[in-house]
Length: 466
Image (cartoon, rainbow, N blue to C red; front, side, top):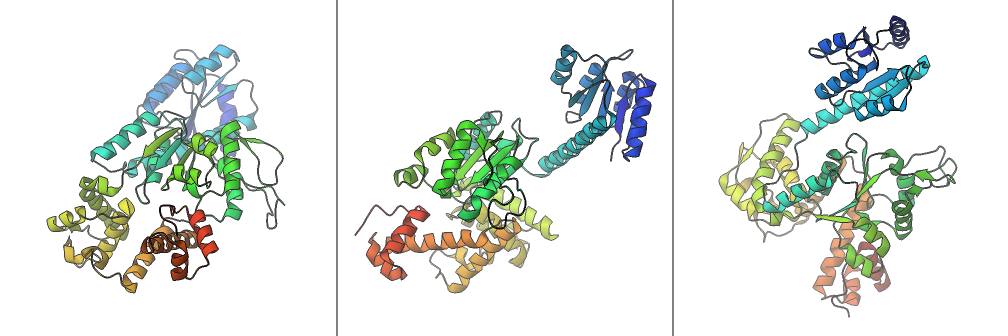
């Protein structure tokens, strides 16, 4: 770890820090003047800088300005014996991490340095992640519109609603909005509201107090508290239960929430980004989603185009994911033949970008040669008229499960069971022309059960009724 720099013309102050930091096993380096520290900055980078503000020669504010110019994320703690408002304001305007008036408590000063070190290391990891993670890929006009919207929205604190089909990359866009915003250095917390059982979702979002319910043996911070100062991404917001919709509306309205079983209001300094693949206006009309919450969330809407509207991006995405899978597996990257590229571009690919990613991973493992021909594609992609055998759809299900588990998703069983039920009901209703009695008989369900599931799953089944 890089050392902490102490800059002060007062030898006794340097001595106090030397003793305290040695005791805490924190590496350090001391300088009697800003000039010497500035000279060292040309060849070295500290973890944290602690500098006096008034010294002979260059001042601590000049040092602060130069240090921030060279290393924008470097935490600089400014200390002074002159605890006047003007010095504090000037230091913070210059980007100081904290302002430490003299005389100070040594333990407090060390605690402040440790916090600054944690911040410095977190900034470094964020920078590495940003550098290692490519921006969202897309050259199609539809995606260029998305990129322009991200640029316009990044500096805003407004609530954003991202809509788009499953697999279009809604969480990637949410992360990009967060990363380029003033909250980028703070946490990004994502939660899939459809993947968590409704009886646990309230505690997941808002936390709970010890003894709030059976099994609550300790206090727990919810996602709102974990995202303090940053961004909370609520995926599949359309599936949120009605009682939780009411609580979420209250947080968005007045900025406070209560833990489950709690009586003390907690301030929520969080930017909310929501996402859904559903038609929320239709769910509002069906009484499945609160109209007032919809308008609170729908301050700014950002629609992600499905892959069939940006077919020219398919070759770019395939190259990227083939290279990514090769790196992960430690093998040579495979490539698509020209005929295979043309074939894929002509497909609808209902799974969108996620389907391309899964396909490329499958090809990296299963394709027999470096150059991938059409015959090397999975059977379900080689022909639109190929029979959907049990082996095909079970294999596809297994790949989807593997993908979700590799991403660290929770509630996989509930999520896939929900999608399975929805697919069965939608196809049965299409087969019967919307006649629910006939569809329920074909599915082996009672009519009331079918009606309840249609409402719960947000299926638009009102075009035709018996």
